[in-house]
Image (cartoon, one colour):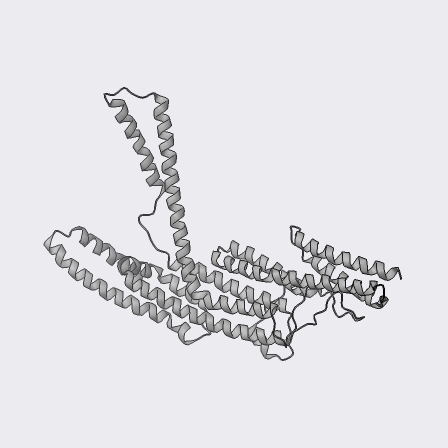
Length: 420
C-alpha cells in the first residue's frame, strides 16, 4: 500500500534531479536515484509475479476478482514500469498472458469435455419432411426455441455432466458455451485495455490543432506588413479556412491511426490469452454440425436456433466493446449457414422424391398412401411454425425462399395424391 504513494513521489524527485543534470551534486544524486530505480523495478517485478501465483497453482481462483480487486488496484505501479523500465513491463505482460492463457485453456477444456459428454446422450432423431413413413417423430418444442435468446434458460454447468440422466439439446449446449465464452472474453478484453494501456505523450490533440491553426494569423500579419502588394481580404480568409480545415483533418487522421494501432495492440494481447478457448469452441461447434457416425446430426431447427443466438451474441459483444470476439462470432455464423442451407435442400429433395413417387410413371402407378402424405404435411407444419418463430426483425429472403420450395413440393404431393 505505501508504494502507491511512494512511487509517484520517487519518480517526481528523479525527474527533478535529471533536470539539473549539469550540477555536480545532481550528477551524484542521479547515480543514486538510478540505483534505487533498479531496486524498485526488481521489487515490483517480484511483487507482480507473486500476484499471478494464485491462478497458476489453483484453478478455482476467480480471475475477474483478481483482475478488478488486485491487479487494477496496482495499475499505477505497472504504469511506472512501462515508463521507466519498459523491459520489465514487457516481461510482466508476457508472464500475465502466459498464465491467463493456461488458466482459460484448462478451464474451458474441462467445461467443453463436460458439454461433449452431455451432447453424446442428448441426440434427437433426424427426420426429413418427405420421409416415406407414417410416423411423425418431429414435434414443435417451444422450450428449445428459447435458446435463440440471451434471456433464455439457465446456462449448463460443467458438473451437470456427472448426472447420467441429464440431457440438453445441442442448441442449448451451444448457447451455454457461447455465453460463457462471451462473458470471459469481454471481461478479459476490458481488463487488457485498462491495465496494459500505453501512455503516449506525443498523441495529437485538439490543442495542437489550435496551435497549427493559430499560425495562420501570423502568416496573415506578415503578408499585410510586407512590402509586396497586399492580397485581397477574401483571399486571406479563404487561405485561413483551407489551412484550418486541412490541419484539423490531418490531426483527426493521426488520432484515428493511433486508435487503430492501439486496437490492434490490445487485440493481439487478447488473442494470445483467448486463442485456445476460441479453438476449443470452434471444434465443439464443428462436432455439432459435422457429427461422427455414432451421433445423430441436428435438424434444421436447432441449426437455425444456433444462428439466431449467435446473432444475438454478436450484438451483445458489440455493446460490450469486444471487437475481437465479434470477428470470431462472424466466423461461427459463416460456418453455420452452409449447414442450414444444406439441410433445407435435403428436406426439399425428400419432398420432391416423395411427390415423384406419388405421381408414378407410364408403367408404374404411384403407391404412396394417404397416411404418408398426412405425416409429411404435419412435419412441414412443425418446421414452418418453428422457422416462423425464429424469424428475425428483418425478413430474410433465404428463409422464405426455402419455405417456398418446401411448400411448392408439398402442394404438388397433395394435388397428386388427391387426384387419384
